[in-house]
Length: 235
Image (tube, rainbow, N blue to C red; front, top):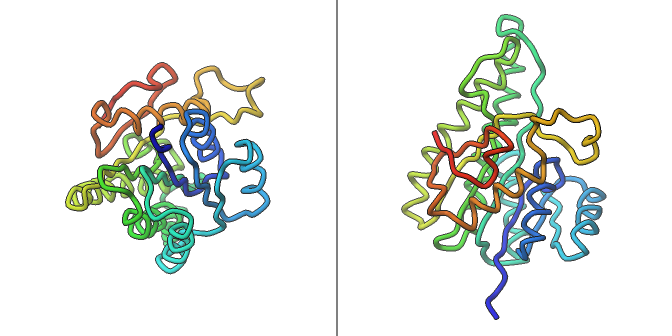
């Protein structure tokens, strides 16, 4: 019997992280869930039939990410995949009203954290494995009042283009999956917009990206609609 594939999910207790954890667990993957809230991690472990490994930690900066990666490495020396889902919410604000401090904080939370996570966790990805980040699609279009999201998601996309190029030298495939939709929580299904991508559909798509890498060549992948789940489209 072959060994189970393994994945570490950073930000596993968030809406998207939980959807990914459920999908990988159902597909038989060994899941290591990483998050900052001990109670939420315990609830996720219970949801996954008590089979997930949980690690309390953060990737807020280089020091935190290094400490967390060291803790995770004690549970497993390497993983077939590491998925990072740590994007923070953006406050709606016109560009001329946004202060430099607000924009810098936005950049820290949505770009720098991904850089810190990648530096700390890509060494834990097995050769021929995949490091994957979840981002947003507002790098490609402008909505009034969302300058923070557009700027940070554009920067994040180009960050992962560089990481993908350098990851090739390490034998690791690095990709970013950009989500072009508000993600629907299962708890909100009754009143949800039928066009919104569901959290478990994100999980199903991530599973396809990991298990069929030849079909999902990066560095930048997109998920734009429910109809596209499990099918490749890239930018």
